[in-house]
Length: 321
Image (cartoon, rainbow, N blue to C red; front, side):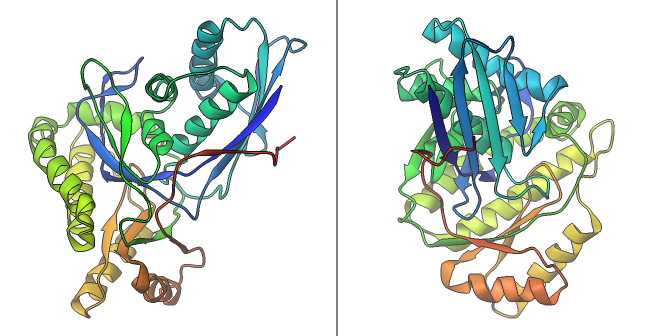
C-alpha cells in the first residue's frame, strides 16, 4: 500500500538546544515553534514484501550512514508497533534544497510518520505518533502539531508537542532567507553541552517559554518577534562558547541582522530569528512582509521567501512515485 503526506517545516521561536537523552531525543527543556506555510516536505511511503531492505531517497539521493540510521529508528519502531514484517520504499522531497537551519528535518519526519502509518493502515493515537516522529527529529513533534506548538520535554512522563493556537489566529508574517552551511545540526546540539553558559540558558528558558506562549495566545506580534530575537542571541552565545567554538552564522547572516536593525530604526517592525544554522527568519506583521522582502532583495538576496503560519500535516493523493 502507498501513502503520501505533506508537512511544513518549523521556525524555532524558543529553540531547544541539547538533548538529555540522545537516543530517545528528549530535550532538556520545553520549546516553542511556528510552522512555515510557504515551505513543505512531501513524503511518499510504500510497503513492500519484495525489497530486501528499506529504500530511502531524500531530495533525489539515496541516503546512507547516520541519515539513514535516523530514518530506520522511526521505521523499525513502527514495524514493531504494527507487527509488520516487510520493508518500506520512501521518497521525500523538500520544497527547497538550499539553506541550513530551516526546520526541514522536522517536516521530513512528521511527513514520514504520517505517510508510513497510512501506508500500513495502522491506527495510532496522536501522542504516540508525536513520540514516534520525535525519535527521528525532536522538532518533528512540533511540525506534527502544526501552527504554533509547544514541545514538552517531560509532561507526565511523556515528551510530545501540542498546538497552542490555530494558524489563522495570529497575524504573524515571516520572511526567510536560506543560507548554505555544511554543519550538521546534531553536531551543534552535542557541542552546546560543553558551554559554560548552558546552565544559565536552562534557567532562562522556563521564563521565556511562558512569556512566548502568552504572546502567542494574545496575538502580540511585537513580543513574539522580540522574544525570538532574544532567544536567538542566547542560543548562539551558548553554541559559540562550547569547546569547539562553533560559529554557525555566515557573513550573509550578519548583513541581514544589521539590515533588520535598520528596518526597526526606520519604523518597519521586524525581528530576526536564527535556528541552528545560518539561515534567517524575519518575523513581522503579515501586512509588512512585502516591504521586508523588498529590503532583502535590494540588499542582493535573490532567494527570499514570504510566508504566513502553516497548519498541520495532511495526506494527499499526489504521490512522488
